[in-house]
Length: 442
Image (tube, rainbow, N blue to C red; front, top):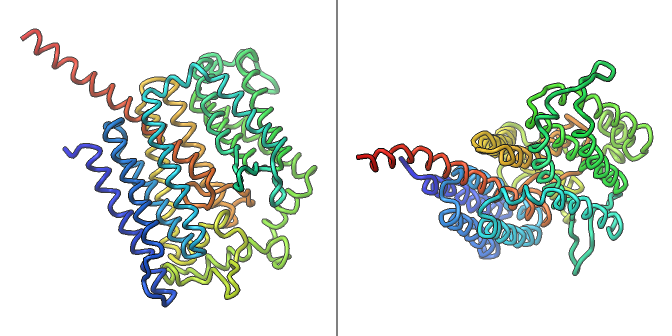
């Protein structure tokens, strides 16, 4: 049987090959000679993933072998597309991937046992809320949302780290209280309600986080936090009525926000009737739909889609962040878009598989919650650009341009692999124990 790290290395090869072929396709489409410009960055990114692979061999040899290759594939597609849009964006993103790789290795080295996080769950949760408060106080408003803090000539999005800290808190709290939360003690309007001594604190905490993101005018993150909370409540208790009640609360909250916030009214109107104002409110979505249609079934190929005008502006505003999926589907067509979605399906499947294989409640909830973060985020952004749901403004994991998102997501993957390694290592020890006892008796 091929050991996990050998399988991982083998599956990293197709991603690397796709990256180099994509760069060659972009260069030839531009009718340029294949210069060395993007090659140093490409080899640097390859070195980052090889370093992460080596770190896993040393620190987590039993971890899942498919998660890192899936991340690598999504990352290189995003880098190639960013290079096609603007080479300087790809160069910056390559730097952030390197920083994310360093964070990945640091998590493996400094946190061999993720369960230590459970002891500090309340401090970590309060720290997550504190990051949102810091953003509210010191943040800079860009495109209507106060999400970034200017620091050293760069902008940092602390909300990306806050979402991970909130998941850690929820995993620890729900593991501790899940028996109480799973058993309703009364009914209110026909809805089963668990003891408020168990449900109340987490509702107050979540309410504080949601209130802060509403003040920051970041309703995409608010939707993400709420979706992750409902998912983790279901994972902790196995009670479907949590999901049903959560859906009802979401519908009521969405209607209230729609009635009170003009910005949300404009966004919903642009989603429902984008062609009524194709030069104004519906411009981004209309351009995205045209771009998706232009890609056809197989697309013209990387570098050959009409994404950048002659004056250097992108045909879709925020193409490198909110609409990176549209860029890929324009150049690779329906087949490429479906392939990209399958990459995310694989990523999410491996994450939930890690949660299923975990041997303790905190590990299951932590892995499930972090996977839900990646899955819901991918659904929100892809659903927005194809007009399935209103645009939310969140980033597509591992592909959209932005350092805070890339670094945080690499940290999430590292935690998932630490959970996977401990689960498989403990399973192997349990299997070996009877054989060792038999050898001693013999």
